[in-house]
Length: 361
Ligand SMILES: [Zn+2]
Image (cartoon, rainbow, N blue to C red; front, side, top):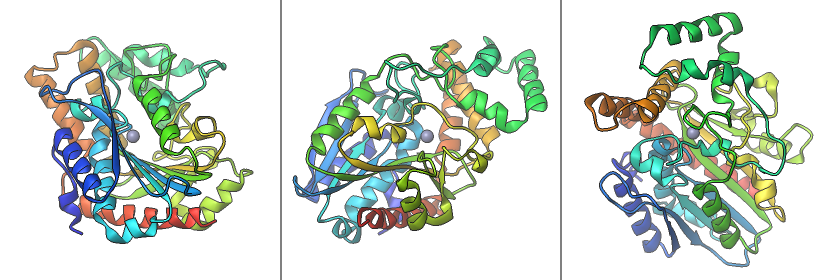
């Protein structure tokens, strides 16, 4: 296995390699075509690669591209799984479902959010129930998304807020999610998205008979360069908390345990897909977690997301400035260096081996 070779340079390349490797190893492919095309006019889709006995009791699910630019890394991990005889054999008695490009629009267009500016990890909620508000975000929206990029008065509002409330509270206001400003940051929307509907239908179809499911959602952008940390959302009283703790040890954290929050895990957002599995797959025991691979410091990562959000709200995607903003977002979310790629793959193998252990409980 040559880890560096698993990483692609475009959505089109990643998708093609994923489908070819899946077909070569006997996976069935179901493709759900997205209504919008890619920047080169290419077809965009959420692709489900499924393998293993239909009546297997247990299943592994691995998702890439919940946030578009992070899809390069998730896709590389999925390709690595397909190319690794060792890993495929480890799960050979189970159902395996690899979902390529949860947010195909964002993957192809280099954007965290969907075609409707929706952050999918703020969108998996039951919209019939009362939802949280985020008054701190509402207060700062005009500064997060100013009409003019790098407007000094907007920057001052944000600097003053951080000085007064501290960096964790600032990140919580920004990252916690909001449903009031459709052109804003970390927007969760007030209805489900194409990606959510397609994902839920695909998971239910692919996992009709399974009882226990481990689901991994691969991300990048929080934490130190190349270092993974793993996050679920189970409270300490939930029996799944102790299973995860005993298998993964200290690298696994919970968004339900606020004493563990720091700048790598500053917030308990409303609507991540991994927290939705109890209502998405209510008849199953699910262990759902995120692998978050670090890239660059939060100021760089969040700064790039703010600029990209501004670009879509007020800028010109095809201008030199637009291209520079996209290049910066790619740089901070997808470090295209051999050391980073090697670290990612080694940790993915470790997480998959431990996931097999969770399924043996
Ligand atoms: Zn992410």
